[in-house]
Image 1: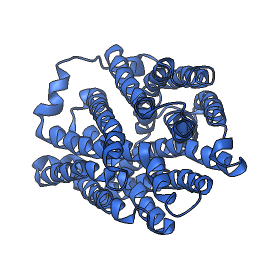
Image 2 (image 1 turned 45 degrees about the horizontal axis):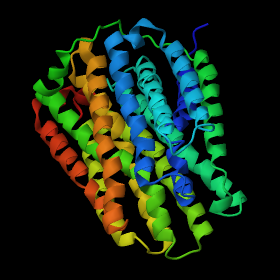
Image 3 (image 1 turned 135 degrees about the vertical axis):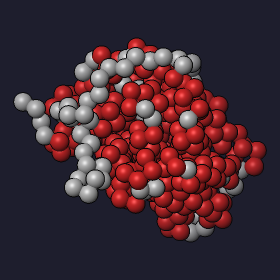
Image 4 (image 1 turned 180 degrees about the vertical axis):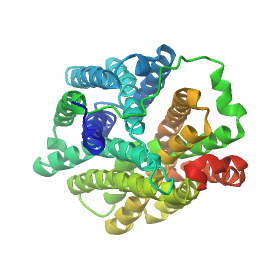
Length: 416
């Protein structure tokens, strides 16, 4: 029996939250591994960047083989979840200071290509217009990116709970985070089979290398992609290193174990707050325009980049307040870049254009993920996030140019 729209979307969102907890499962335990001298700074960076690299590889392979269109997307989602869960669980037996650990994270990233984009594809099949001609595409994509955000935040909550119940950071068993997130992904593999397919499931379209140039030749696509790249320059580096930044700040005002607990809980709240930003941003963009939402969000997150150093070692409550605002704004624009590509690209090339956008963005994010700890090792954590400011600045410029372009009429039913 075919499930209805909102039942299917609810199942999809829950499955995404569970499965995407794997994305940051290993990164969330990095502070503990670093404190115990199990890994060094370079290895810590590889834990996150390996997932990004795997995701880029996975999306390109999936697009070139047309896997998302040749296979029931629910089946691809299930297989990807199970393989990723096994790779994540294998970290429990792998030497964390060996090359095997980043290799397993690479496999996890490859599998994410069968989860995150497939989830957005499934959500888009249910997009519809109301009587005023307004599409709910932005909200539906926001729902899925919000699920990614919650999934990425969940390992930090597990860490915070374990730290609170253990005898400080030294007593925290990081293996629980890996075990629980692996179990969550396995559960997601079962749940997704209960979701239905929407009426807008597109036909199969083969990947052609020449399509890559369309992402740059078309002025509208070029500007939307530049905006997305500016957004990605900031997003994952902030997510990856927020715990370390907060703990470095909190240690100036409170004991070590207490600082570790509040840093992990604060990171969870910061990242999870982005889920609300995705939903609010999607709702607003469908009604008032995609460039309006993206420019506002980029301006807010860029401002937080500038202020983070001023709030470092201030009262923890004030720093957490700033971080929550940052967490909401830094990802509120993300779904709207994907929605913009969907509306600006030729219909038969939408899947390829989204793949190119996503691959380029995650590839760029690997630079800042490695850049921040290097800068922190040189100058400390206080001002390190200033290195992310160019991303929002370029994004604002690109989306303002798109807003003034005639192609902006294609966005959100003419709502810029």
